Length: 387
Image 1 (tube, rainbow, N blue to C red):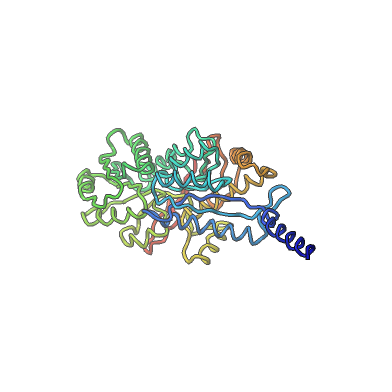
Image 2 (cartoon, rainbow, N blue to C red):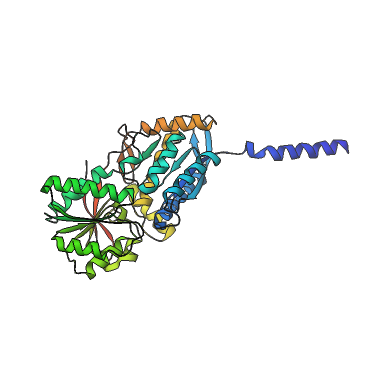
């Protein structure tokens, strides 16, 4: 009987210890907007993440050095708010002890969350934040997209050369980092081309405003040839509809924040024929970009937007850096430091949104794509503009 008790006790010890002997796990955090103003952004991020995680785990896991690891993704909803993004970053880094963090996407959340990640010495990659302050003087913070100091001049040149604009109007949210920064870069570049005062209306509003009639009246009366509005997919339909209702018949041009798959559902005919800059165009895609699009569409029932594609690239950048460490030590901070070093030395990463090399400031040099919205709401490739 005594021997039986010993056997039972031994079995219990073995069973209790089994998790430690099971496959090692790599934990990665996602700081994304699953609710709030732009939930489609969070959805696209999570869908891409889940698709990649399933592919790698079903194939046996991620091999790093002489070990193979199961991927575990932890999703935190930042509610499209700056304060929630910083709280999510703190939780992921301190409580969950993730090796690295993907997101936030929007600059309004990525800038403050990046401060947390850098101070806590945890690698962070924002797939979609184009504001320079996200990575500025932050060695642990990276991005997978071009910057607004590049995007602004691209758009200023485009509306000049392709649309014949000599006078421009701008409408933007002054309380949000991304549109405010991009509006200023566009204005500076357009006036460099056409001279001071060629931006004849520089109109602002505040987050959550939904009536733009006063600003649009000023824009229409200004004599502008085009209207540039670097706003998100939930705001663009309101702006375009109200502009058309007030008699605006000239081009409206946007930026990469327009690129959500939800834009057509919300905007419809008011957005047909309009242009915006972005990171990739699904129409006409080839090679592994098309493979990604086809897999995503088959799994989730719609064409992935730029956020989904950039999240895919950001994750693969991170996983490549983890593998390039040659092996993880199990010491979270040492491994975070090693991953950061590998990210910083990335050269010629061949992503589905283009090739990326980090320039010493954790910002990749990449091309922009100009997209035209067709009469069916499809995002059609118009032209590519490279640095």
